[in-house]
Image 1 (cartoon, one colour):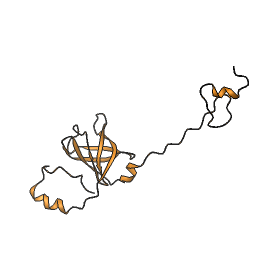
Image 2 (spheres, rainbow, N blue to C red):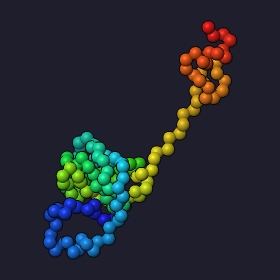
Image 3 (tube, helix red, strand yellow):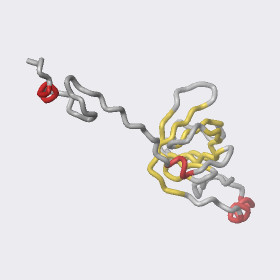
Image 4 (cartoon, helix red, strand yellow):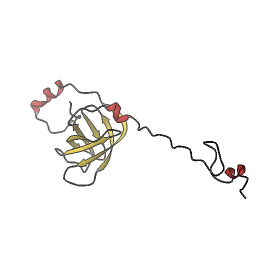
Length: 144
């Protein structure tokens, strides 16, 4: 797993820089998704815009209330909540590392919604026939 990219001026030890360059990073995907962050120990869940998403982490906007080092549950797009740690927070953005790898394609999946069964109006016999206004009464010999 890889960490979300911290800002350039994030406090990292000088000797850690070469090590950071050697780490293999998962590709980042720019996505149009929302995320919900739930903090342990209370507090209302917060909603955020997802800027980047990878198998190992996410970068969020609107993250001023999040604290570095906090353990949270993150729900991204269509995915169930995943345990994560906030790695960095700066300029209203946050980098969050997932405890286990996710599938970014599954997060982007749209929820399948079954169509509602057609309701039959008064006097109509065909599915999908109009059921509002005066049209359903046209075939009703007892209607006024």
